[in-house]
Length: 172
Image 1 (cartoon, rainbow, N blue to C red):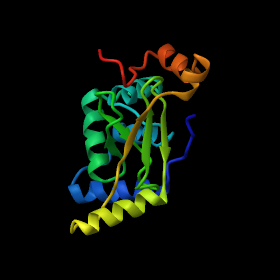
Image 2 (image 1 turned 30 degrees about the vertical axis):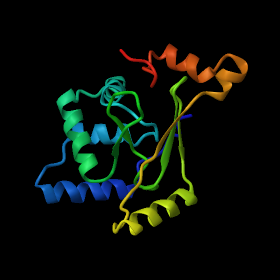
Image 3 (image 1 turned 45 degrees about the horizontal axis):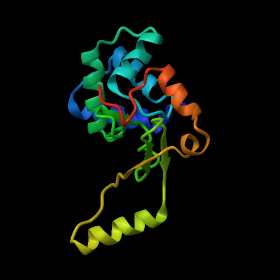
């Protein structure tokens, strides 16, 4: 389920400060991209973002989308993540939750974010024992769909196929 969110004022302030330090200027197309990214907490690929922008009436080019994604990643406002589907995916949820993890269903493609204090503690112990200090963690667990196994069907799989989404265990 996609949770609609309003862009946090803190995100805008951090980005504006970052852009100033880089000597860049504010642009309407970059603002449109940022608004669309932070309008939900859903993970996305650059192509999915480009499609969302087109639906919103934006004229931003693919090149502008890619440059803006790189800028947001560099500013630590989004993170590139590997969801096992062979594509670049971006996660806008690291501002509020810098240490969260992902469970990816290899059958239906559903992505579930989770946090676990035990994993945080383990991460801290392992990195310190090896002489490092943890900055961030990212864990991806791939799993099979329990709904599909027990009932023979999964509404998430049906939705993924209707949207022509590439599933993690499928190769194009």
